Image 1 (tube, rainbow, N blue to C red):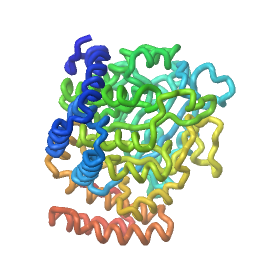
Image 2: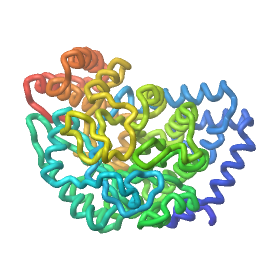
Image 3: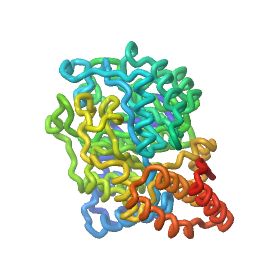
Image 4: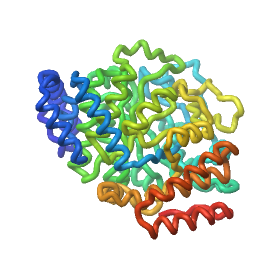
Length: 472
């Protein structure tokens, strides 16, 4: 199929032929240093790279150029996101699923995994447990099952989550990661007040996709790949994409991922709000060694750096699939959102011991939220529990224009400090609170606008007195 980023047909905006030509072009020019230098210079303009340009950098073998790529990614991350890291947690609602995905333990033929679906009372208890940890932002997850997990169930769960006010706790933003659905259902999700709609492509290689999804509605490659267009049509202007690295050749996936971003920009005027970068991990009934496309930590870091160069304004998410060491490496290269204290089982947050009988994947980073917050601040980052842009209507192209103009520093930086202050006052250990207070004092001076800085300082004092939920 001819490549057409403005097409609404998956086979045209993710063109297999275009990806193969891109990979061949990249391989032919991987040692073309003048071309590589010109692409790096273009990246410095912070207006992004095409999938073909970024693919050339991905296979570059020159150590000096690679060092420049990493440094530029680090500089770009600081320019747009400063030292803020947004915190979130996943909440698994149900592992009932009718699909046959060969890499996921929730697949319908897995008869020995415990099947579980949270009642609304259980959802409420999970939310209270998450609030008691200090979380303000959740990503809800559920298998695809029209009987057990219909859209009405998801909507009821969202309503329950937003309704729970416990002590000083409140979930202020619910992101949704559920199966591809209809425009009508996306409108219902929008009306329910969700933040970002997230859907991983898993793989952009159509033949591999159909092999990996042999049964169930997810087998339909086009319907799945075109989901973000239906979400946009349904009024959701913040969408998050991603692939599961390890299922197919990473060079192919990287080109497809960027083509999807180009498509959203070309058709809807705004690219993805976030890009996630999961790698396949061990889970019940799933052996990651069965998939022969695994990637090294070094390649993983390069992918993160090049995503930052290619789509400078897009948030990048990394989960507890990755170890502390890997997460630390990629934080500086582009990652802007991080889960903490996560449990990937259905429910489980209210239990003292981490349950494993319903986990979707093994958790590599098993630290508590307080330990992750402490670690981030030791590294010089500001853990942010901010949800202000969504609640103030700064989504889609409005958020991107704020980011591109640089004014984000006068919103996100003070909001990060104020939500961190809330966390320190309400949930942090004594040691974490001491480090955080010193960090806030130092970072207050980095708010560019004098008036905003003064207002933020006043709000911080009021938070210390017990008042909550200030935002710019």
